[in-house]
Length: 519
Image 1 (cartoon, rainbow, N blue to C red):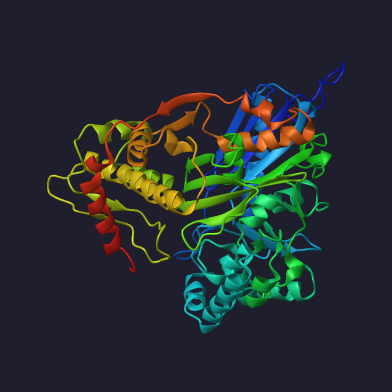
Image 2: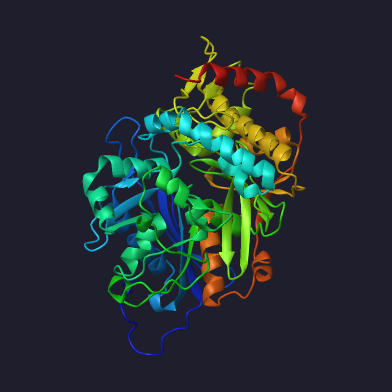
C-alpha cells in the first residue's frame, strides 16, 4: 500500500507507533518504533555536502527536504503501516547548521551553512585578538569575582570558534545584502535544521525551535534561557531573526495533510547529541554518553546545575520537559567517522568492519601517527590533518591502526578534562554512533580511561531519543522510568590493559599533534 494513501474499508488502526528521524551530517535516517521501542521499519539516505569554496561546507535545502520526506514515507511503508497509525514524529537534527529565509516568501537567502564550515575563520581570529573582547573578559571577570554568580563566568573567558553559529550568522549579514535588508524590515527568519523542517512541514504556520537546539547555537544564554541580546548586538545580529523556543517534548502542531495524506503530529524537536543522550537513558547527574559518529562528543548530565568551564567543555541545555530543565556539559572533537570514511575512500580498506581486525593484526602502529583536523585543547582552525612517522615498511594496517588509535587518544584527552573539571561522580559510559561498532576503538578507549563502556544493541541513539521524546508527548509512553526498562545492551567493554602500556604511543601522538598546529 503506498504510504500516505487511505486504507480501503474498515476502521483506522490506532496510533501506536512513533517516528524518530535523525538528520545527521552524513545521512538522514528514519526508524519506526513500536511501544516496546523495537524498530518496525527503517529508511536511510545519504546527505551530500556541497563545497563551493575551500573551507565552505553547505547543504542544499531542497535536497535535504526531499530526503527528509522520502525516508519518512519509505520507513512507514517498510513497516507495513499507514501514516494515521503514527502517534508522533520526533526530529533529531545536526546542531549549529543553519539557514535564513524571507518571512513572507519562505525563500532561503542561501544554502544551509554547516557546523563544519570554516568561512568565518578570519572573523573568528579577528575577534579573538580584539581589544574589545579583552575588555569584556575583564568586566565579566570582575562581575564574577564580586557576585560569585556563575552566569558571569562564561563571558569572562568568551572566545569564538568556527563551529559556533554566531560568527557565521554575523558573516551572513555582512556578506548577503538581501538577508541584511530583510532583517532591517523584520522579514528575515533564522533557523537551525529543526526550525526550518518544522516551518516546511506546517506550510509556514509554525516557527519555533526547542531549548536543546537553541542552546547549541552559542547565541542562546543557558542561564537565562533567552537569546543573548548582548552577544547579538556585539555581532550586529538583529534580535528579530530568532525563533520562539519551546519544550523539547512538546506538541508543535501537525504536518500539513498534503505532505503525508494525513496530519501527522510533530511532538519533539531535539539536537542530535542531546537526543542520543536521552536515547541512552542518561537521565541522572553523572551519567555519561560518548557518541562517535561524524564527530565525537562526550556529554555529562549535570542535572539542574549549569556547569561553566573555562575552556574545552561548555554547558548546554540537554532537554526541557514541562518544569524539568536538564543541563549537560559537553566536550567535542570533529572528524571521527569522517577520518575513517576518508581512509575507505582512498582504498586503505574495503569494508569498515575490517578495520578492527586490521589494527589487531599488528603489535603497534610502528611509530606512525595520524592527526585528524580536530582540536580539543587548542582553538586552531588551521590545524593540519597529517600522517607522521611513515617508513618504507609502513603498511595499510599501520595506517588504519594509526587512525583508530587517534580516536582513542582523543577520547582519553577529553575524558581527563572531564574528570578534572566536572566535580560530579561519573557513572558508566554509554557509547553510540557508527564508530562504537569498532571493537578496537571501544576496547582501547576503555583501557585508556580505565572505565567500563556499554554499547547498546541499536547504535542509532539520536533517532531513538527523538522517538522517546515524541512518544512521551503523544502518550505512547508515560514516563522515563518506563523508557529505562526498554534499554538493550549488546556489549560491555571493560579495561584489559594498563594505561602505561599505551604511554609511549600516546606521547608520540601528542608530539605529532603539536607539529600540526597553526598550519
